[in-house]
Image (cartoon, rainbow, N blue to C red):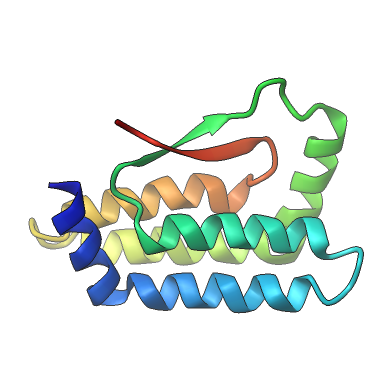
Length: 125
């Protein structure tokens, strides 16, 4: 079932979300300071390609003070805008019954879009 939903997700706009995260990651990786943020964009692009069958888990051991500082910088720069975009898309998709699973995936991506450091994307079996 998740394969069918991932194909529908990809065809109905998931490739645009993923492409935007990939381009943002490439732009951030141009500078040395932006590399950690670019890596987080690549993590979000993987989730943007096929969110069904994946979940977000906290890393072990937790990131500590550095992860908190990086998350604060992330929120100030692109994080808040990305999270608001995912919330808006979730609200639009939740209007119809057919769009509810896709809205749930945007809500899952919102969590990672606002606080990407200290979390990882894992495949659910």
